[in-house]
Length: 129
Image (cartoon, rainbow, N blue to C red; front, side, top):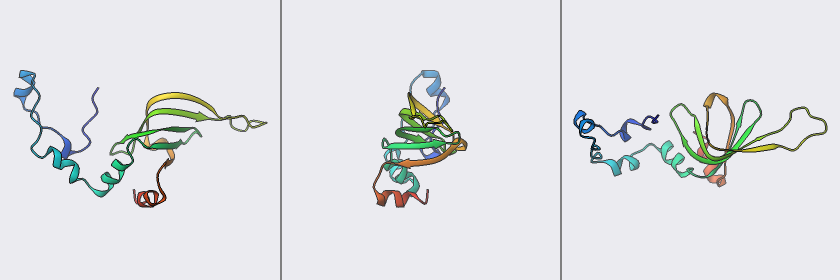
């Protein structure tokens, strides 16, 4: 199953002939310009690629991994992710349990918090996202 293209400017048109001949369509003429003409929000998110990100979800778990991508709906993909969870209302408090998850998708509807390991200036500029 393939993921849909990130945006209309990054889509590569493919003709019916290309499918019949099993040859890939040529890249668009402005393929290199597509990245430079992106919006300021996209440019800010690109700077965060492969940085450590801590994402909290509604049920109290946290996922720590490298930021891989985000889609238009706000779903986040982390790579090399580790899940952290603790027992609620346990007496005495128990340490957090952890398990390796690999590549995961965190739906926007489940996300309760999101933190990125970056400088204070970068964090301030991300507040508008």
